[in-house]
Length: 331
Image (cartoon, rainbow, N blue to C red):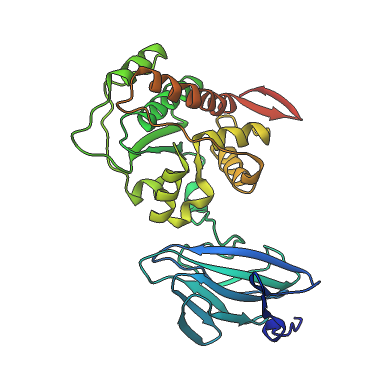
């Protein structure tokens, strides 16, 4: 285990006529991150063998543990975590907090030993991910559980769930289970006539849909969470941070399946592998929010459909094909 000296004595603030700058490192290999810790959440208690870390709180109030010491650190406060020393970053406040992390030494995402973890990740490498329920979720006898999310659960997520349920049911009955809910559902909301009409146009019956409010249990139970917008994705992760690696925008996940040429077919284990792979490659696509058409006229519903249906079709297509010896074949 290497020894890396504390670099804070080499860091400095310099004043110039136009203002100031701070220098944290000079001509040395480092890996730099800005970590956001949501309110009420914390990273695992962990150690690294090949790197040491410098933390500086950017905003918010964060709980820092280094060795046997734990303290509340405010904006501008720093910490040095030597190689092999246990450490943890948490947020017991009511607002998200951010920290600048500069890793010195050999950076490897697999170089992490978790001593304690709220998400039961059992030594897996990514601080922002989960697969905590992997053993439970991987039971091949279970259907793949897909959950769609929007605001009112009467337009976007309702239609998306109905569309996927109908099309996937044609390909592989009983292999997919599709549900939906809304982050802003209210009990007086009803499916608009435009959604009923859109459903009729695409052979997606909407008359039996009953909206419901999205809760954490929905997110925990799902293998794949598909949201209408970035805002909905953020709301899911604020509720269940451990759902990061299985929560995508609808357009994002469809684009990743296409970009990465993933064809899981109707096999649940293959879908779980595809979801994992997609989670590591998010930067390769630029997702598009599905616009909210509610009370904006038929043209807005047509725009919603034009954005969402091609993405849903790409997801369905991948359920109907597999790759055999490098050749895509019907699933």
